[in-house]
Length: 458
Image (cartoon, rainbow, N blue to C red):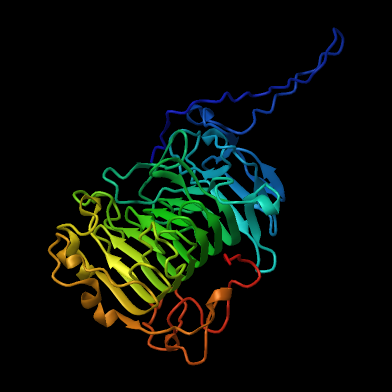
């Protein structure tokens, strides 16, 4: 795959060449060859920020502006390190962001794989990416977020898209299902999010065509001004993920993401939008990229909303499932949302139900849901599409209306009381190398795996 990077309002990269040597007429000394430094092809030289062109290891550090990690380069973050980003003062060019670039087979002297992050903390010593402001002043939108760009497929016509939220164009998409963008484990990403324009935002963690060779587990997104985690195609799996305090959606994915997920928690803030917003195809008339429609396999999720009246200006659905979405959603608790616990919709052309509405129900499985204290189910069957049943009827066998009996939801303890109906009735997980067998509904049974490393909005 050829990586194309265009339209940059360039910066000039200066190479400092030091020639050391001395001579006289009687004792000539051969000059010392200058160190050429890391290879930076011309196509990357005008990236609008700091270029990381060779492997680096960071401990505690404070950064300013965008940082681009070139293909073939690994950025390692030490266990327990705190990486802070200076405030951007509203300037898109100064937004602190880590951008890991995709594989490049043409522009270097040798083919290079996708850039990698190696951020491995522990439950007692997590890695934290945060704002450089004093703790009392930190807020959403203080810096951008982390962007991993891979070489895996998506479903965009032509297979290539342009990364959102950057002041200049960087593309993503390839054909390597198992592409490896590194490891994120016991990592907290907080006070993030930035919007250059409507529809072009940086999320807490953005994953563009990221492949299955990447490991993401024990991830916490805390206080983001847009989505918590957003996936654009790819095949990466995510496990043990907490999104708390996102302004928009906690989990947003489309463009043919084909990965797996287990043990996810979303805690929505007031006036946020949806717990999930999931789209099958950006353009329902052409979903021709390598992955086909979005089709994930998800197990063991708890989604908790802001309560009655908490989001008067937003949909505030537990799950908004749209645009020919397919896949398998299992063992999910949805509670405390103003809007419907889940809603099936068509595409943007008929936002509240269009003629494509009835294309996917036989390929979208919803199993073993518990829904409680939400708004009413939506009836899309009368909204212009060809569906004949409202969601509540179509999926009547998929959910139970019952109090899940959390131990202390107000205190963000979503483990289950002894008599909870979520302790039984679960759908069995696939027997593979990713899923853990968990015979309960929701993200927790008796043990709170967020303790000690994650932050959850109070």
